Length: 64
Image (tube, rainbow, N blue to C red; front, side):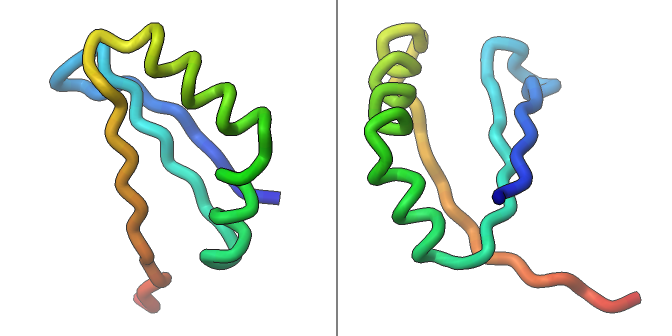
C-alpha cells in the first residue's frame, strides 16, 4: 500500500501537492490504470483553475 500525503502549496494556496511513496514503477502504472484513478483525474481537471500537471520523480533514501 502506498503512502500518500496532500499538501497546500505555501506560495499558491489554490495548488495541491500530492506526495506519494510507491514500491516501484509497476505499482504506479497499475494505480493509474484503475478506473477510479482515471475518474479522479477527470474530476480534478473539471474542478481545477488550470490543467493539472503530474510529475513523477524517482528518489532513494540517503544514509546520514
